[in-house]
Image: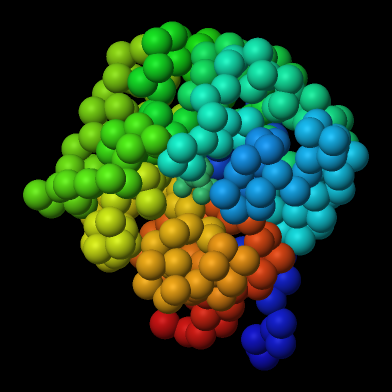
Length: 304
Ligand code: 7PJ
């Protein structure tokens, strides 16, 4: 039989990459991780480094504009939309739980009503986790790996899958002098310790995703070492999330401004998928979906 001339991401059944963990149940939406999944980023912050509050009008979040972005991303192939209400860039204003809720909840509710995607909430705040779960979120994404007081309990009670990310230090100062003796080993040890903490609080390993946290308390060299070491982290048997989109490591390596970092972000996305990443977090869903589809085509149509 002739191989298909084009690949239809919705139809070709690939060889399973994580045969033991093909799907996650995200509040009734099933998330198929047998092939790479694109997570589109929607920032509801006025001071995001990557899109500079582009969803704001008259210093308020423009819900219609945010929904437009969400629809575009879903149509472009995002399986997950990651909604964030706290900027983690160095020097960002801290936000109160109330403010974070005001930013995130209306959008979660609207997306849950309108779009057949998994809604992820990028938050470290227990109250936001609880309310977002009630409003229809299907995944909790915490750059602080549930270390805030009450976060383990809130995540456990939600019943949702959780992404645990590694960060060295705190956003305000994490890029001042990151240090590791062996970044791959230390990130692995940290993530393993957070997996244990989750298990002790009744969050099963099967509900977890892990993220090495590119750019979070890491030099360019640390980021490169982690990308090369991704298969070691993947060997833990828990699906990996990675995010490079528009990050400053690309600025450091190439001298590119934020708006010029997409091509390099795509290259990093494909390199990560090749090394076992299951979920790619990105601001540029359509382009990333195409890039990852080329990796998929090679997997499925390229023979052995
Ligand atoms: C990440 C994140 C990331 C996960 C941010 C930015 C900064 N969550 N939230 N992984 N980055 N899981 O978008 O550049 O890399 S916020």
